[in-house]
Length: 483
Image 1 (cartoon, one colour):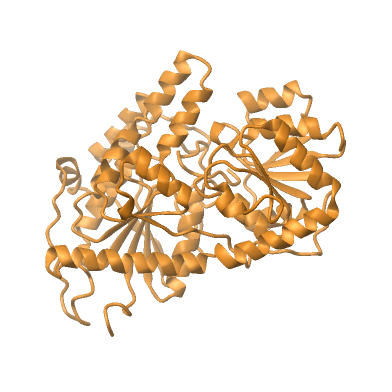
Image 2 (image 1 turned 30 degrees about the horizontal axis):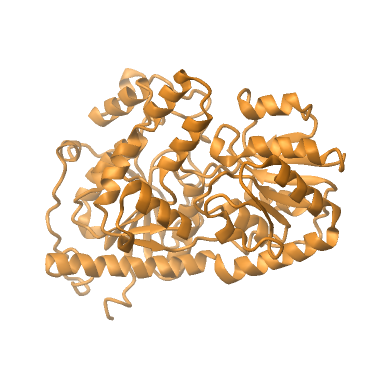
């Protein structure tokens, strides 16, 4: 068997893996399944909340790297008990949280490094899902890194939305980890991203050379997200997937637009897949416009419930100011539900041309959003046409099988490039069956080397199920689903 045809042994890293609380979790869940379907062996290495995977025991295994899980429900930002501390990485995690920072990208990278350092012969390639931590540099293994979009974009938008200096100070401290991510990104040999828009942002914001950035669009699970005529439309229902506490998602503009739409369509109401805010701009807008009875929030729903909710809507809406891809757009289109979406970031790359596969509006424009929603709600024929064209677009362009094939090609390129640098060592493909695989020693950072003395991993049984509680705080860079 040639190296190009040999199945690969992949370590897929994810510091945030809950598929019901972020786009990163959805990515890991579906990509691991489709890579395994291609014949590859995938070991997902993740932290709390642990990934929920479809194919455990069928080419996919889960290794748990426990953290202190400081943001878990029902006690986020908790102070751990003394007996919970295992090593200095735990102390670093707590100390960073206590000073207002977000520690998980760094601390997960250090835990992953010490785990991988002991198992370099087990993997052909490491795929990091947007950790971008110091611990993943100089592993001595081929490395591919997915950056869905630069978190610097989130930081800019949150600073712009901050209403006073205290909030701005808090935002700057929370996003301090982006300095690390910039430094790491510039040293990465191969970056995978999900859209042309994200590629441009990565080059500009993070300083990564464009030639190192490869665009591989992700997709919707088109078997799950599919039309079903037996699910009746609910008159006036608009559905969106959004985090109310993340300005980037633009939910406050959709609430304002709903108030305008209800003057023409009194039955119009909004269902938000996400957590109801107790305070903040979205909660204030709902109260100011008198929409308490017209806006519902749902969370913790199953995939099947999410699909039926989208099917039942007359219109799906993506009001985001920016997206690196927009899974909610692709999933709504796959169900055949008419889509109204902004042109923020990569949304047009997914949603397609205005009037053909969606109704497109400028981001942050509640009036334009209201006009598009009004037009869609008033015209059943338009909704049917947009829904059918939208599903066709997703089937043609955005499926997980296509994403897995293209990603595996990038793995092989990374392995070949590593072999060229190391003289064939460490590629994971130069040895024949039963022969030892020799890899060059890593060049660890001082911190990562110190961390290597500890190992607190657990590998799941093939019949493992979901782990951990839903995260109450969205990790930066995730797309909220039903958290």
